Amino acid sequence: MSYPKILAIVLAGGKGERLFPLTSFRSKPSVPFGGRYRIADFVLSNLVNSHIYSIYMLVQYKSQSLIEHTRRNWVLSSLIKDHFVTIVPPQMRMGPEWFQGTADAVFQNIPLIQDHRPALVAVFGSDHIYRMDIRQMMDFHLQKGANVTVAARPVSLEQASSFGVILTDGDKRITGFQEKPRKPAPMPGDPNRAYVSMGNYIFDRETLLRALAKAQRKKQHDFGAHIIPNLVDTGKVFAYDFADNIIEGTTETEEKGYWRDVGTIPAFFDAHMDMLGDKPRFELHNPGWPIHPSAYEGPSARILRGDIRNSIIGEGSVINKAKVCNSVVRNGVIIEKGVTIEDCIIMDNTIIRSGCSLKRVIVDKHNIIGEGQHIGFDPDKDRFKCHVDPSGIAIIPRGGKLRRAAKD
Image (cartoon, rainbow, N blue to C red; front, side, top):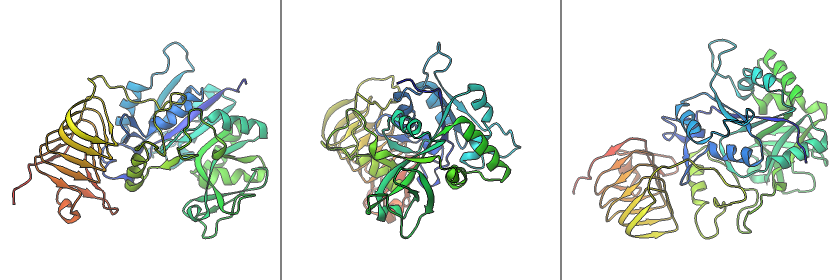
């Protein structure tokens, strides 16, 4: 099938305050995820795998980490002018203020849309872990003759109370919205589930440009709260059911329609655990729909001796006489003898010295944990060493150094 020309705009400026302290030095989309990725790699991989190669990524807060990551890992083509992933910082076209919201971010970059002249514009967030063939959403958009299509995820009515709920008719035409309702309206034909927005949209170009200009005059700056509701009365705003999206190579044991907002420490931690096991909820290895990782120019992992169970071990890591269980260990990590790591996420270039024990701990990049440290067993003691999330998960911020534990 021949598709109309499409431009993707990825919104990647989020502060990620609920992911503190992982966002102390970087934006939320730039936070490392899994053994080899950043959160933003998932939306970029979905776009490229869907043959959408013209991508502007709008950044804002603490963006240098994401800029460098994109420069090193997302060079699509030096020969084909329409194949690019380009970082776009705030242009301050409307004054000295930064982007005031998702819609304002796109409004301030209207010249990019006008210069590219696409028939369709995909506006996607960059904060989620999932696989999606966006061509299937485009097919739906074109078949319906839609002006706007919103990616919608079916969830149970109990879960729906925590989201903005989309009301549709039997033809999946959007008729209204409910913001975190106590009694969500169910999907047509399914009394136990409701549609919630995924924050991903496909617009006809002229519809988007008119809607942005109108919203700017009214000082309305958000897609979910303003742009989409303002267009509902046109009768050409539709909900694309993410449950209908089929990805080749998905295993029978994976969770159908897997999608996670990893905006909190517990959600971020749980999404890592979803990748483990012989029947993971989300299988990272799918040759038919790869998530493209960061490049690593170093040696393979070395396990000199150890007890490694149900874990992901990144390149360049060295494990010597240690126990690692139910954990994700990223690139260049050194784990010395006598160390026990259980239910942990250990990020790049961290050194864990002899005799340490860690349980339910996230260790950010470039850390050195001194000999004999025990973290994750006593929250009151841990608060003197690191950040303890209300969920009980301990987080050691980037670039720290914990001294050798004092002997009792």
